[in-house]
Length: 194
Image: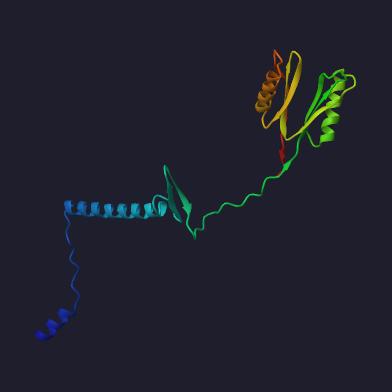
């Protein structure tokens, strides 16, 4: 019977023995666990944010003398720049009108056609009391400037009002006129339509 008793006792599961932890061991294990969790979090987070060379995931670094940037990788799913349509521009016209005796008395700018600019300049000349008003100059997609001196004036064109005025003042002085000054300047700039 003792043999049977011995075999039964071997079959019975043993009671779980509780291990006693002291405070120092418990605190040490918790510190190690926290450190492991934090290290894992930072490792995963930094690899997701900066996949390669400090660049976001799907991009790689590109460098040159004094510059560095990130560019999409060859199979990147990032939003590629959508090709923009080529800008289309509408011409803009301007005109100057003078009186019968050659005095500048009317102007128009930013008109849709040369003829509408001439008509508007002549109307402007007449509205200011000009007699025998007619077209003196037209211009398209640029600026015009008139510099006047003691014996006459010079008209010049430019891509900016300052450029046109500088050229007109130079032409006035080069012509031997004295007391050259800005008499008129205006621009008719093209209008973007898309």
